[in-house]
Length: 524
Image 1 (cartoon, rainbow, N blue to C red):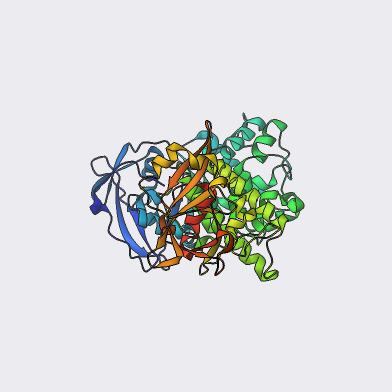
Image 2: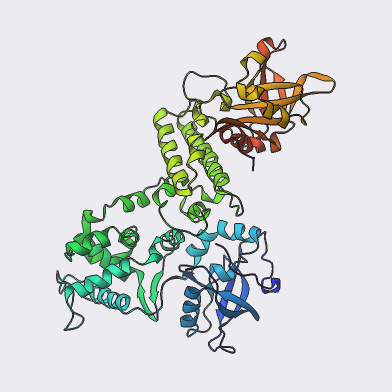
């Protein structure tokens, strides 16, 4: 969700932050010097009556000028095509993300995306814009409407109805296949826009089709209408069909449900019908969907998860930061859920493997596999365990109010890896004042610490050295530890036998620590 061109700041007034407030759009029926004219007004989400646009932003480049609140504003071709069609319906209140959200205000985008699911659920109608006039799509709409109107127990037939005398059945299947193959269906934002709304219409040019008519026809393919093999794989494997059967009994005519029966027991449908709406499962289910901003692989699906309302939306972070946030957030949720049934017990290995499979899938989606490859320590490293060493995998999902204790060991010069004795490292740390070097157990990180003046039994972290494996062999990176800086390092025992220490990390630094220890990267 990004805006192509800059625009005058006076276009947007400020939305109230304490309430769920949105902007709504009205379009003038006539053109203003050849430009479409739009006006924005604020409304409370709880009381507003509006129509939401679901569409593809389309190719890059906002090339069409409109007037928005009297100011020039540029939009992309696909949105301009829709506005040009819908202006024939003056007075309609619309919600369109590219226009109703100040895309250049990151804080506003974060807040609006957080309530996006509610925006679609509360809409009087959601219009799925499939693009300008298209003869094949319109033919498919006509076919589906004819099937809907003839679908009853008295006069239904197991063949496609004839639309024109010179038309073959293959022509009809061609149009259906094209309708199911549009790029629109592959957008990640479409998932919640369709699944959360209660009143959908498809719109192609000026031709509209109620969603239940579309879902009815798609659900009956190969149940009532045998589909030729050349089209079957294309249609059955399409994302359009997965949407059509995801909520079938709300959409398909009651008298036809007996015809469908178990045919609708599709993996997608079963997954959506389940009550296990956890975030990791949802991200895995829809990970192959497309979006321009990689962060939207997560943010566009939050509303489909029971936990999504608690997940922080932060545009401007990078993909690795997002992956780590999801990893930590879902890990905490998994551990909390498990503890309600088996208190004080580590997460079972089977559950751990399932969790890590989901993490790998998300890492592949975001293209941050190196980050995933280093997260196995999240379960297996005692350095990330608040309960100390354990012979079995011991997950660390510290609660928001818990202090995390990490075990550290004082380094003996003879035990230092060669990289810590290299001249290049010595030059890099020459400007850092430290008294002791501690190894963070079960990790590739070392803490540079200073003794507190007047407190010989306590240390403070001033920097972190992390070993990095690269194409040229092993190297190192000096990290500024962010919130971890100044954290207390205390002896494990009064006599501190063997140089054993513990590092206390405050709750708000847990994620920073995960980045430092596992990924060896700059903290958020």
